[in-house]
Length: 198
Ligand code: HEC
Image (cartoon, rainbow, N blue to C red; front, side, top):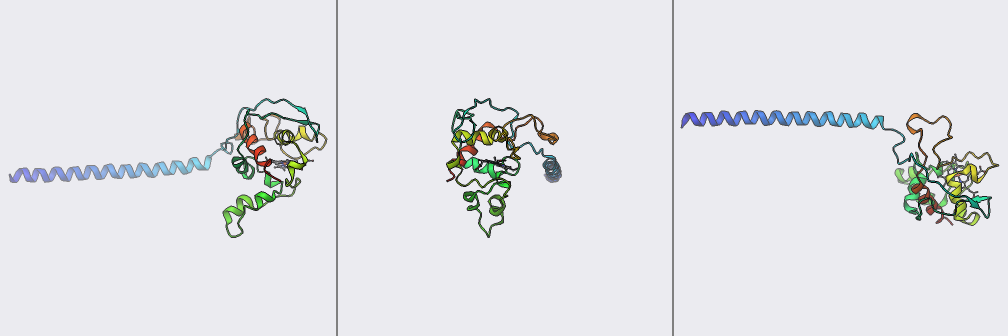
């Protein structure tokens, strides 16, 4: 009786040491995992924001306000304007507001909220404001401008990037070589958003 009690006690103590050990190991593993996650975050490629390695083919037709347009959706469907807004303010995808003032986007910035200010508040003035863009161009022309500003404005030597091609860029950072700046779906989303701008 006495001996078995001592034995039981010893067994319990051993079990405690074992589980404590396992707990410690698990904690250490977790810590290592977190460290790895931080390292991975640091190494994160700049081309992991949905930039595609494939581009859609499209047919050019005659435009009304500029020579050419792409009258059909690149995906065969219409885009999502809410997503389009996201790509337009995304610093590594569209980043349209780096060059264009868009009053409708500016109106989303709350003066006392730094996060919303950062996302929506600061617009460049390198390109023309996009307010009223639907009065100046058809949807197909807007699509061509976003897909390939070089084809839309062939004589302008425009500095606006061509967002839907994957070759012919100069000095692309290594992570982004072979990728287009935006996918066909993202282009359609942006076009859908631009169509909501008065
Ligand atoms: C590096 C600057 C830059 C960026 C980034 C940029 N654009 Fe432009 N964009 C321009 C310039 C400059 C023009 C005027 C065309 C020219 O060069 O004559 C222009 C013209 C346009 C036009 C025609 C406007 C008009 O009224 O004539 C549209 C529409 C447009 N851009 C949409 C976009 C969208 C959408 C994005 C983001 C996906 C974007 N741009 C990103 C510089 C830029």
